Image 1 (spheres, helix red, strand yellow):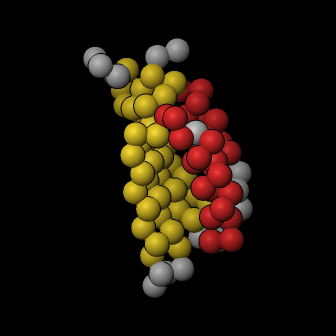
Image 2: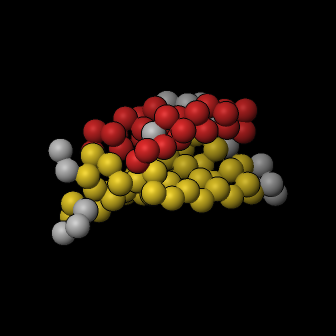
Image 3: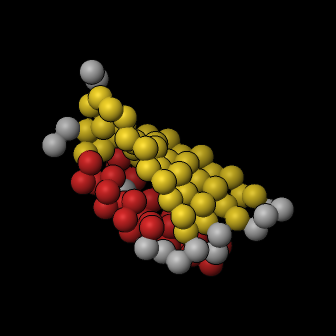
Amino acid sequence: MENRISVVSIIVEDTGVSSQVNELLHEFGQYIVGRLGIPYKDRGISIICIVLDAPGDIVSSLSGKLGMLKGVSIKTIVAKQPKGK
């Protein structure tokens, strides 16, 4: 399966699961090209944006595991073209 560039946007509304989110991101760290985290203290949430260079099944696995966490919302966008094309 070819790698694609994907962006996973994560909103953590329950900061009690932040350590679980970070563990998952560490587990998939070899595929992460970049990460931006914004602690939005006024709203009591954290916003994380992850850029991945990975096969679709890896992106789906990470997205699914993140989406199963209580208090976490995610959205994934996948580039139309495989990398390098």
